[in-house]
Image (cartoon, rainbow over all chains, first blue to last red; front, side, top):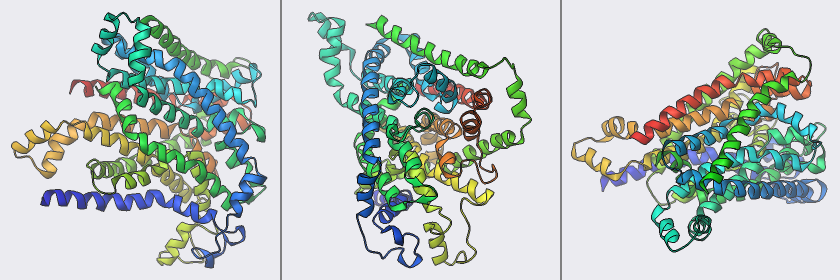
Length: 275
Length: 277
């Protein structure tokens, strides 16, 4: 009992201060976002001020914010679709591919995920301009799968490996084709895993910055991550409350789904290699 | 089915391989300069500094991350009341788009209205007249971007560390208890070696994502003041995109390859060890 109590005290003692430090920036963003623009620099109004939703109104009605959200969502959904079409069969095959070959291939695919955008954006910018896709959202839809597919294959491999082979063998004996077994047996069991892949792929796309700032140049085609830092700053004037609101709106929902799907993400992420 | 999968996997590997060769070939879009770009960079003091800054940025932030994430993971691994909420707070910096939160920090580091300065003044640690300008002087700017990078990678490392700790079977714990191992001894001789492979993979990940990250330095300082926070990625971007010297920029970016190679070898090594144990 005393050991359990001590452990709990240790947990609270460590986690609470860390949680405060890690989450504080978001608290301060929220506070700033409700301030009237005239009061953000006022040292006497740090915590006591007249809360207002003016910045939120400004954001939605007088900037391209809604447009950027739509762009990010559109690119995200298209990339998720492409990723699933490629990664589901590939991940399944790699999970069932016996022996060293399957393992090595799996690790090789995973390593491609490590190749960073900052290494590839210059040559790719050439490719994009050759294809005539500069400043088009399709440029992003074309390029993003290069890192979402390896990532998704890796996660899916982890999930598929956890499904017992016997289930499929039974389906094959009952007259299912290999493909039929995948569609009727494996996929329905993997729905939570697939959902996890969808969510983390989508957030990878929404988070991406380097390609988006390199390939997109016009305000209407910007995605969320690029639009906010470039367009919400007018000359040298920063509309800080508006910017803070713009940060919080996508961050909070993303964090909620992350938290909800975290355990499955860990299973898939470590399962591919370590089980 | 297997063949289709292999056919999908193989072109993918090939595509990445090609993108690698393309990365070098891209720099040759003009007249052939051979190793000229590389030679020129090695003689450029800004570039040499950028290599050093990249190293500092990565090493310091990841050292902080290992310590903090290690502590956090041990505290979070067992269930307790309020864990869900606390874990949500801890995850926030990782889940939120970093390009956006980095702008948030631009505001927290504001020369006039920085909330950090306000706290320090209230605590009487700095004077109200002569307070630090977080992004204004070389040393402070470097510390500031390192802080942000550590802040945003702690959650990810924590999550993977937790997986590492949780993967140790209960039997091992029991066996250790029967053999009389407790506290630090158990941690040092039993838990740590068993979770080490996964933990190291998490750290290697952190190194890759930090050494090749552009967002945090780009948004907060864009390499300034006086190139004091110029890292390889921001310098490659400025050279390749802003100045239009694609070849030179690509050459700069390629200097990240040794880091990648080192990490990849490390990862393969530890992934294999994890499988054996």
